Image (cartoon, rainbow, N blue to C red; front, side):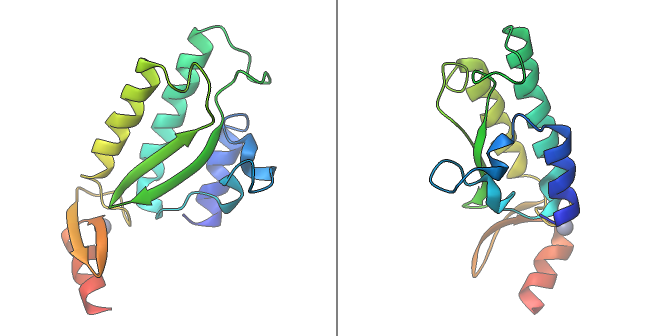
Length: 138
Ligand SMILES: [Zn+2]
């Protein structure tokens, strides 16, 4: 993820991503989003939906109960979004949102956000046709 896009997400969801200034023993968010920028919209939507659930449950953004992302990364070609353990983080509703985003990421080019498929070029990634060709030729 580019520094600009990373900052946009941090600015839009400062409490969800409050781990960005924490030591790595507590949160890996200081590494930013460990995937390419094509998933920016997906991560933005997921962040919004998780905050909506928290708001609907009556939590305050500045409170300890507010959901906190501790790592966001690509694994085996799809998005993995890890929240600090809490009753909300392990609720069926949030689990379903995370699963939905993970499934969507497996159909979205990680580089540009266009429709993509899982490909294996040295490692597994979700890419559109153009970016698959580019990776093969690199
Ligand atoms: Zn692409």
